[in-house]
Amino acid sequence: MSLDARVIVEWPEFRLDVELRVDDGETVAVMGPNGAGKTTLLRTLAGLRAIDDGRITVDRTAWDEPATKTFVTASARNIGLVFQDHLLFEHLSALDNVAFGPRARGRGKTHARALALDMLRRLDLAEHADARPSRLSGGQSQRVALARALVNEPKLLLLDEPLASLDVGTRRRVRREIAHDIESFGTSTVLVTHDPVDAREIADRVVVLDRGSVVQSGSVDEVATHPANEWIAELFGGAR
Amino acid sequence: MSRDVRVTGRTPVVIVVLASVAALFFVLPFAGLMWRVPWSNLFDVLGDEDVIRALSLSLRTSIVAAILAALLGVPLAWALARTRFPGRRFLRAVATLSMVLPPVVGGVALFFSFGRRGLFGQWLHEWFGITLPFSTAGVIVAQLFVAMPFLVLAVEPAFRQSDPRYEDAARSLGGSSWFVFTRVSLPAVRPALASGLLLAWARALGEFGATITFAGNLPGRTQTLPLATYVALETEPTEALVISLLTIGISFTMLLGLRDRWLEVDR
Image (tube, rainbow over all chains, first blue to last red):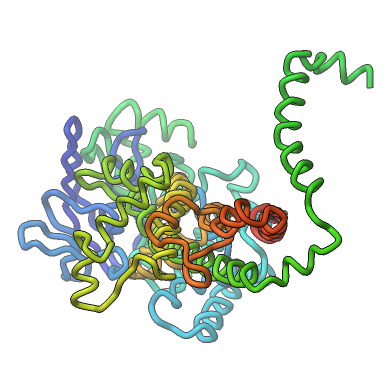
């Protein structure tokens, strides 16, 4: 699946105007300082916020296009969403968290659980199937959240700082695992991160935002070697 | 021991005295009541037909009122916490007004709105043949009116404090708004719902003023335990004592049972 979007969101004192393309199977990292509009961009792609102008098109189907009054709701978009703080449902086991998506799409309990167990096995998490989220480590929680997001075979995977809440040691390992998971599923992915190492290891391409606009985009190496501004230079300088 | 005193300091004498007065104030009335209870023929009075009818009526109506309070109050609390619409603050004030209103006034208001000649009551009577005053349904309406605010006030802050991004996550997984509400929003407020149910039920069980004003005092139909207690106090004080003891027993049992099962968060 491929995404083609021009996202325009107007706030009283802030305007987000970003063009974003994600090709089939590609992973694009969205970076930028706080307040650049990264999370807002992700929320519009997820359908949790409508755009004020522009369009969001997936495989030539419009998901959000104010000009034609088109808006596909979040629940009908088939996206996978992973937050910084995993947001697993605390009253459900890891297995039932993953089974939530298929259940929400009308599968029976048994079938949904079978799909969920399958997914946990693929991510090597089957041993935690019965655990409550509070019993899981940060890295395990984040990967169960990834399993939950992937089980519906989403057209687009949206990751909002998925590693930011992990400690340094765990982060390196989970980063490698998540990079591997995304690679093996081949899902088109938008990754919001502030960490250039995430971008380097997980993403194919980087888009850098600042105050609502794209200031640079390209492969990780291009952006690192020819940074468009001081902020980017410093960011990637630290990563070398 | 001495180390603890050094760390925390002594409790101020004023506080010890006032707290003791407060504790006595709660304990003494029960002591006074227990002292006069006719323990020897307790079960004779408990077996009295009027007492059994009042007990049965009170349990049935208060439980139905508590369930209705949850059925209607939870959506109201959700709407107040999660949506924005003009008049929302006004609605919250109106919805909780009956908590601070003298129940008799609530009863009068119910009488002139849902009474047989009331603003809406006349339609109920004409179209559906429903007459609420002086009926068991009227008792439930009176109890619901005074009890639902307790549920709303318990549940609304819980909705407000639960992170709306859990609902976002559920929607992104394909959940319809109803699915998300029942599977994610509602479980997140379960402890608050349990305590709200308990408070609403207790308030319904104790309802007196609105009930006697709106539903009257008909034995077997609208005479609940509090009404029976009040009537008995004038004619048969020992019976009033026994019914009071019974009511205390029910409330206390429910309080303990619910606390162990729901109110204390597991782990």
